[in-house]
Length: 398
Image 1: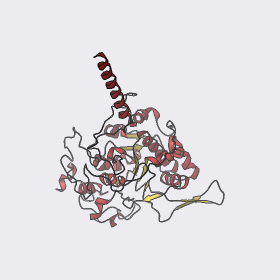
Image 2: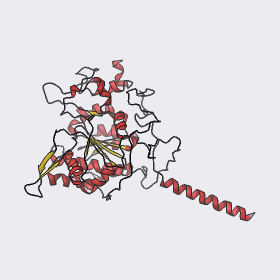
Image 3: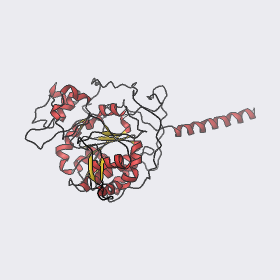
Image 4: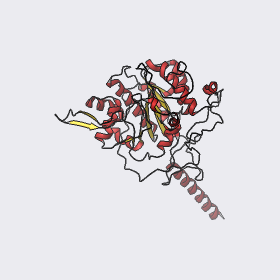
């Protein structure tokens, strides 16, 4: 009898340890509210979006599987986890956020989060067995400056920011208590200069990239503060690509590759495509890891100064010229450099980003019905209500 008890005890202990090992080796995941549109916060008196269903021909459902996803894993290049340079960000103010971005720890430093064991019958996977990309897998960075907090960031907070609050980070150049109260750690003071010169822009991009790397998310998506991002459409598009492959998604503003002087080889020129930051772009985790030696740990600024290019051009230089990868053009990204009113209203639901321009006698904005031009000069609020009519700001249009 004692022998049987001893054997049973040994088997149970072995099974428990084996389960723990398998649990630790599984991918850490968070259960989200469907991925495309997050649940409204419980403390929101308006309960914006509660109970509404999006019928935008985007065909989102909790049972959706990707039709395009993908192929064997790439071998990932080694990326050194260098600490962020104090030259490019306030390490004292931002170190706690970098810690929080690490999915293996919670807000108490060093304390492990509990692993979530997903039930196989409800976990969404593609045909290769990889878990389907969710909204929580995307890191969205918005580059801004203190000059535009009121005029630009405010409208973003009223519109598409509300669809992905936990995924969006604003990278600015000054402290702003009003916006800090709203955004908390999602407002990052990079301590970069507030001008629009090459070094200042690259300084912010360096911080954006390092924050993304610390987050360990699948996708890094960058937009400027004059862009409306259609969050559900972005998620739908990213589900068609594997984060384990090298993807650089965006849209060039030029009809030809950028050509610059090769400063290391006299008389030679460098030629490459780049996705304009004004329209937004996304980079997969696999490709971002390979960018590490040229962009990680503050090295992005050094690379930008070497070729004397602004931030979005430098991203293209690293990916296309140094890493020999190619830009995948996604036509649904749109910057203020395009004639935006040519986008027809029935096409708006399929666009990923749109922008606007204030620098001409005739505003360069999208053509969408809604609020008048005095109430909504950017057309962002009207677009938001066109896409998501159940939000509280849209009730005046009903």
